[in-house]
Length: 272
Image (cartoon, rainbow, N blue to C red; front, side, top):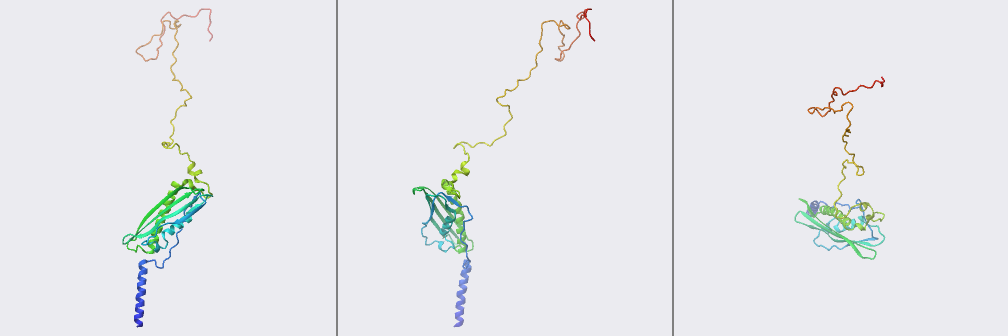
């Protein structure tokens, strides 16, 4: 009887050990999700309320995951969304968050959130909607193990962090502030000159061609000054200089005809 007892106990422990090995994470601990390393998103509201409205899913694997998807979303909202205003409020609403099995070796999940903002008179003035889905193929591992569910949840949260911030900056930029509560629209990129809407962007500056200023008239082209002519006979060439028409344009001077030169009178003297 004693032998049978120990044999039965050994079989039970062996079966439990095999189950733990198949899961691979029976005694494994997982760190909580942390998003404090990401930049905070400051909103011009006095408070931010986180609401979990995700419907219950009986066949969901969320309860088995080390960190349920909706809890991961709550952690993200508490660490990244900051109320930096003096009035108004924001509501972070979890619409959907689940993990489900997808076939024999895969799991899938989805997250759907909405962020509403209201002014001081509680008038709803804007919202953003962010939804992501993700599928994990576990291969030859158990897709429903805690480790695989934890991995899928983290992958989904990476996608959600990117998508939510993108939607906020796209649609709720006027509600964003810096850490001191100063609206972002009054500084940074919003102060750059953007030009007229619909106009073509200005072309890149090019090196201008060298040109004379418009206010300075260009100098007139130089022309040869014509030699003034006179009808009076030349003292040396009274009949005019003979030219060689077949020669080059250069004027060829020839000696005057005999009897043209006159000697000075005897009454005049030359100084040497």
